[in-house]
Length: 626
Image (cartoon, rainbow, N blue to C red; front, side, top):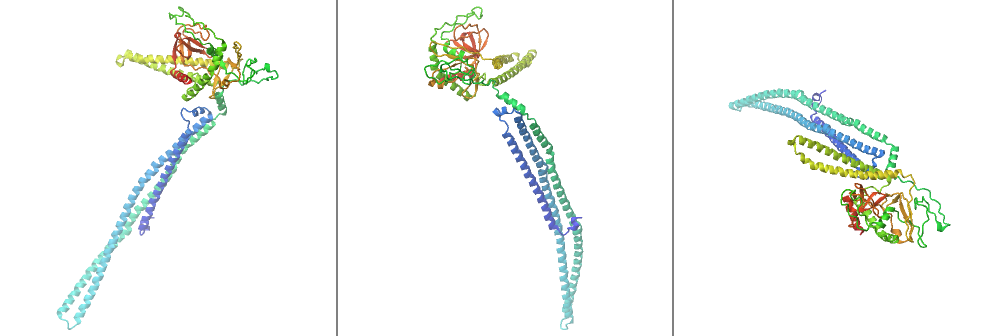
């Protein structure tokens, strides 16, 4: 079955059919190209979707991904990213294996088709030329035959006419003979041209056209085979990524199966456990005996009080609570040293001057004067504390010891800080070890470098390690304090004493586990706090619970100091403490040993290391409060 023999007279139809075949191929190429664009668009949208729901760096969302359900969701997002990558692979493979290859093939196919049909048209033009030549020879032969017949008839007519001269008859005879000769020549030429045309026509229809049409048929069959192979490739490209897509889906399933609801519930406990004990039962208060009102020891308004009756000022009281203030804080406010501090010992040895001159005993004012001064200054302290908290929130800085957090959360933060500092120390030590080895190499091979060039850096590393160790010591102290407090949480609270003065209010001790700060955070208080009740005044509404002063640095005791006066604290030589208020020009520095012990020491007896950031914030707050 050959187009050359079966379709020898369908040149125009074959031309149209082969053009249709090329159009089909180009249509398939366009289809695949649009499919690749869809795959790319789909992959891009999947990636954007995955990126949209990824946790943002340094945000609260990162903390949420410690839960197994959130981690499974994150794994799903990552697998969807890989899933999108497979669709990009589909697009790339279809572009390279189908679109690119077929585009080049179509160009070659068009050139080949053009060549074949050019040869076909050339063969047709040749046979048409031969036909025209045959027609011309035939017409010429026909004309010459007619001319010869007319010349013969004229000669016979002239020869039969007796009136015509012999010369005219001879001339007619010669003319007839000439025309007969021309007819014979035309006949011979026509016969030759006819034979030639028949030969050419046979070659055209049995040799040239079949050969050309056979090539066109082969070209068309190759096109059909090629588009079939491209369709197979179209399917294979998809099939190749199915195993990887299946793995992505398997990983999503695996992530879903890894969700542990019990573990997530435990993490919620670890994340939000405060470490506080729930309040006890509220006891009955007997209002039938107004002069002997009993306050519940476990009520929320007077948690763990000593149960003693509260003296009243005047005849009216709203029953509001005085702010919870630490005993040592109140004493510091009422009895801070106002005399010049003693000079440091002449000798660095504590044995030479073991104590030095003590701060002179100040004249005690009546406690009522001190108490009234404290009451009138408290609104300013309240304002200062509010400003301090507002500025702390704006600056994004909380207390260094995380005292704004509940006990359990504070312990976790402190442990995390200790771990981070230990890692920093290890890094610094690794650098120091590397530099030490480098120095040894330089000492053994001076041509490689100067050993003294690394001494400065080694000294810096040593200082950094020492500072970090001090930081670790500081945070470990807070950590040990918190852990100790948590272990003692179930034990009974100590009852604080009463502060009494001449004809003034009585101060009831109230051990509070916690106090709620205005910004919603918790501040862990020590076990001894005071609660005072006063007549209802405007100050009662404005007064807020006091916070411990933040640490602004550390200090090292250079000499031993026996703090025997009120407001002072004893320190031993070499002891490390925390600075909570620097020297205001009076020669005294306020320090803290732990939450229960703080007071003033002579500035000349300690070496102070202030934390620059804390100092700046503290000074800013102080200026604002003024």
